[in-house]
Length: 136
Image (cartoon, helix red, strand yellow):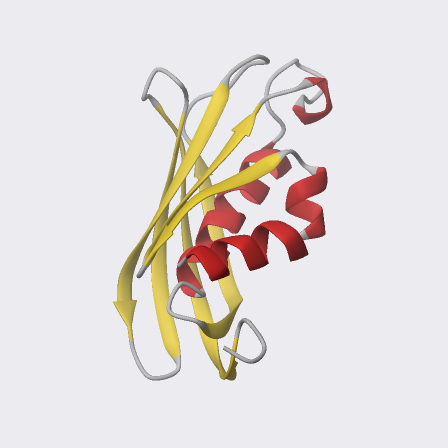
């Protein structure tokens, strides 16, 4: 799992630019974290929905690629439960719901540093016919 975690942390430039860290990858699951900074806030000084989506999407991507087979998202949706504020550390925990030959589905919970649910995310991934990490 470490090779997959390292590959995603190194190659996902948008997540890196957004200040997201992929903390853990296990078979069918992943954990990502983001410390909220000024750049993550909208005009109301709450975390922008796009920042929340990006955090959840990285956890989803890591979980869907966790077995080493390349996978790409083909559908995703998010529900915002409560606002998050500056200075908060948000965690996104992705869990596999199903996995078939070509499709897999995931649920992601985004929580604040008080363990309160901020958003829920659901995603479906299409499995490609090649490994995520070349040569693996």
